[in-house]
Image (cartoon, rainbow, N blue to C red; front, side, top):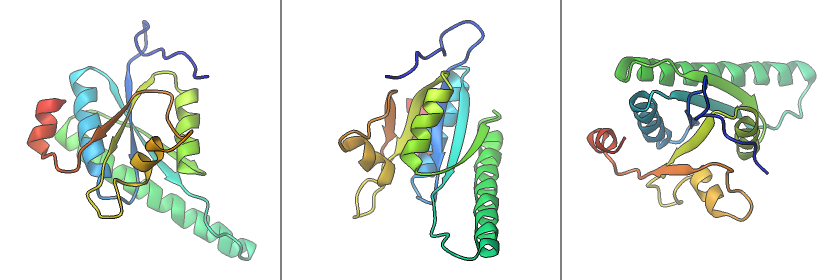
Length: 163
């Protein structure tokens, strides 16, 4: 059961959620989500999820690895936020979570009832469309809000025209 979405209620704005990761296609998703947020007076939310690593080391090493992962997440989010500010002129919300990516996306959607659309982009690699797009096709991994999947082959101009 998903909480009621509040994005259409007074004092709320519809939020578009894009996931920042190390896949090349995430840039397409951010571009589309940012353009949709701008055109609809919505909000762009960027989430970076730090997956649980193999932290079976001495405590000091584990803490260093976690700190480095957090720094990488901050840098990636800031890089995408700067692109959005420059190209679209909006200020995105930036969120860092630790855990399994699909679990953290579900949790964020449940916590923030203004998030109305998850935007993903499919990859063009021979391995498949990408881990998140593949997960929505799987059993039980579907998200409780609409998911927009941006084809990898769309140009910036195509994305602008569609958003």
